[in-house]
Length: 95
Image 1 (cartoon, rainbow, N blue to C red):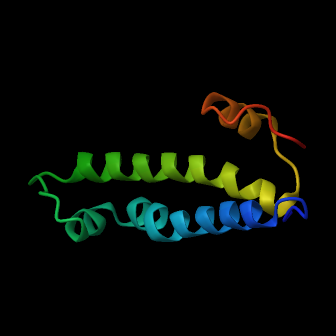
Image 2 (cartoon, one colour; image 1 turned 90 degrees about the horizontal axis):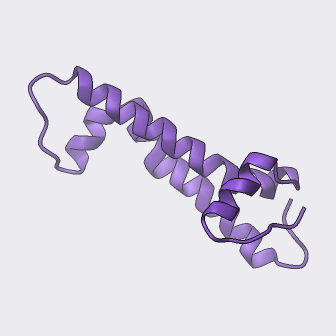
C-alpha cells in the first residue's frame, strides 16, 4: 500500500523492487549463461555447475527483492521481512 505519509519513499521501494526483478533477477534466474555473455564474463567449457550457481543466485536475489516490494502492495510487513530489514540496519519498521 502506498503510504500517504511517505508517498515518495513508498513509490521508490515499489518501483525499485519491480525494476530489480525485471532487469536483473529474471534474466539471471531464467537464462544465466545468456546473462553472463551480456555481462562479458568468461564461461567455462562445462556449464552445468555455472547454470546451477547462476540460478541459485537468481533465486536468492528474488527472495531478497520480493520482501522489499510486497509491503507496498499488501500494506503489511510479514515477520520475516521485518527481521530482514532490521538485520540490514533499517531499525524497527511500522506496520
